[in-house]
Length: 378
Image 1 (cartoon, one colour):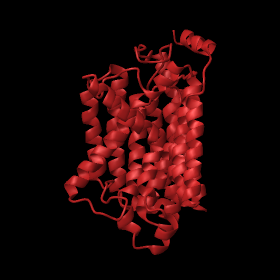
Image 2 (cartoon, rainbow, N blue to C red; image 1 turned 90 degrees about the vertical axis):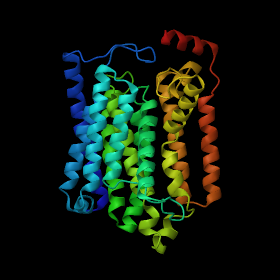
Image 3 (tube, helix red, strand yellow; image 1 turned 90 degrees about the horizontal axis):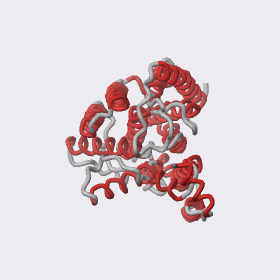
Image 4 (cartoon, rainbow, N blue to C red; image 1 turned 60 degrees about the vertical axis):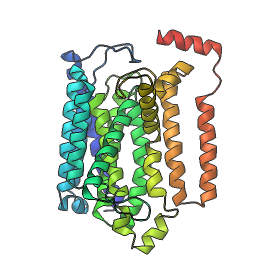
């Protein structure tokens, strides 16, 4: 059976199980009133359950189990350390995330759990061993471990920070994951290495869970993924990108056919992970700078994220979500184009896409629309 069909089966399993469990979690949350009060920074107007991360985690777990039964994915599970590390890290962030969604934990506890989860991931082999350009080996194993932990924690928090609008994180992760899968699948299909299989499989499982969760998270959302879901999404995105970016040159730099076909220009392995995470990383950086300059903790909550600013500009809830989706798509696909077309064509496409995104973002809004948006928020 063609490998792409097997990936499709895994995606459908992840999506189907996640959707069914999301409905179950929503009904149980309503029955047992597991609906936390609305916070000052929230944009929704009615109490909504925030335990969707549980359904996403179980959906991903079942999909990984289904893949383990398929002989074609044997290389991924032949040396199970990476899978074990991913499972342990996922359990940690989901457990702490669920606790935070119910009891609103202090940010230091969440950060400690994130560091522990990232450490488990790195300790079991999903780690940054080389720099993406030139095959430069990181100085020592301890520096490699620390660099991986920092990268994973950064991505988890970046994704968590943008989780403020219905469907935003699920949509961004779906778009970014689909683009990254194309890249990972092309490499995997030529290089035939275990790590490329792991990256592709992890990405497909994540995209499937996000697609299965979206029907209940579409505006107006019935269920939120909560911190458990957003941190899990960030963890999976980090794991998949590190699986390729962190080892890419040491694995296949000597394969001239693969290198010439897929690494021209050679900076794609470095830029693509940044491109698919452009929106969450930008929002995270702005939030940290903003809070530090104000003398606050970088993890203190506020209502000044990119999605909040789009709402304040007068965009509707759905409009703000779509704008951030478009930005993600433009950045990710624009960088991916360098693999398929001459560099000047890819640059031109990026410029045009950026211009379209800017127009959509700053599209003149009439006074009546601003007023109606203000009244909607009130």
